[in-house]
Length: 279
Image 1 (tube, helix red, strand yellow):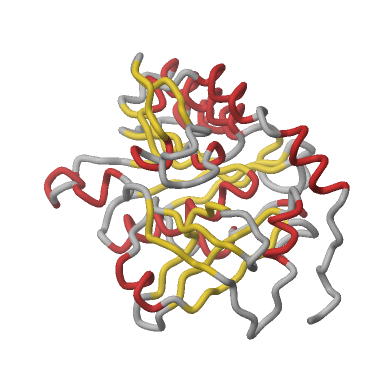
Image 2 (spheres, rainbow, N blue to C red; image 1 turned 120 degrees about the vertical axis):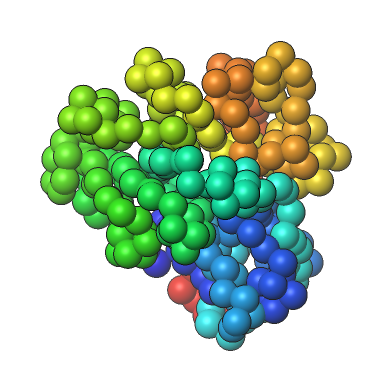
């Protein structure tokens, strides 16, 4: 447990681990009664045949996933799905022209790690801003800190690092002379919206966001992750999950994100929690 409600699990899935790239996701069904839950991959170990997932307990299905203990098995683990991060397809010369800044918030910090690690392994400069309400809610700081050039921690209450939000820290970095070609923001939808607005104000050429939180079915069949990008309807699960943040209709995306809240609350109300009870 990284926090009281966020759990990291290492899953043995050799074929998936060999094929997966940063930015992709997998779908898990905890048991025969469980729904399909899309989760972005937060680490890949092809040599040991494992992938890592990070799950935040929000409703009934995420509670069932987190209730699994060491040695247990999920009914289904499917992937890798979605498209890898754009930088995976860039040439060495194109990568050398890039200077990345990542802004990570909440559970969105976890999928930032494989991206930062991939770029670091390819010799590309990477800075990372991780934000949370307080120091106890910060996750993956050691892992990301070991794989980036500079790590900046931000807390709303100032309990550690910079006091304030990640976008304010980005503005400070630019004011201090930092220069970035690409801002990648992964976290709560409202945080990504303001990261994009700040990047535009600071004239950062590229802004990339991950719309993984919109996904439900993960195959493009349910339509729950429809979002307007560049004036066109796109599906986050099959055409993303990462998109050009400057083209995303965030207001529409936030409305869509809240469309199942009443159903989720009802399911959680009738759910019997298995966490910590054993099998």
